[in-house]
Length: 163
Image (cartoon, rainbow, N blue to C red):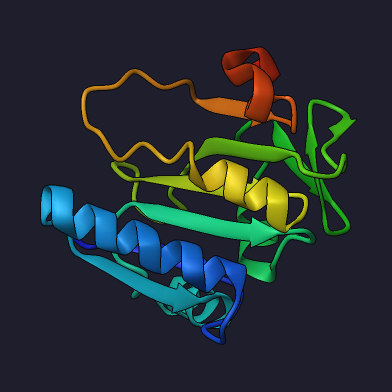
């Protein structure tokens, strides 16, 4: 009913912008879905003034979490939380180099929509996370997944956890 909104820390050239453009392109080519890419500050402002929209969100982060991501996770509605700028899953710090996490979170203002977080502890982890973005429809995926560098050699054997 509304465009998918990808939230990136900044619209300046970055790994997050590159990833957002690739996903937006794939969603257009394969599904003709509309995607809007917005910066962290704009997303926060839209949330404050009620204009964020009802579309599903995808929140990108590499390394420290941005303000928008931290504000959503402060609601503590999933097993993922944030302490400082660090992502934590049930007390376990997700700070190992080249680690990636994807997880669903309730949309901050529309109960019928969701937010998908795509987080990498560094650029290598972020690229690993982008490969897990579900482009195909009808594929069963978990609510959350954490993978590390072993996934490059071992495939699903590199999954550190799902739920």
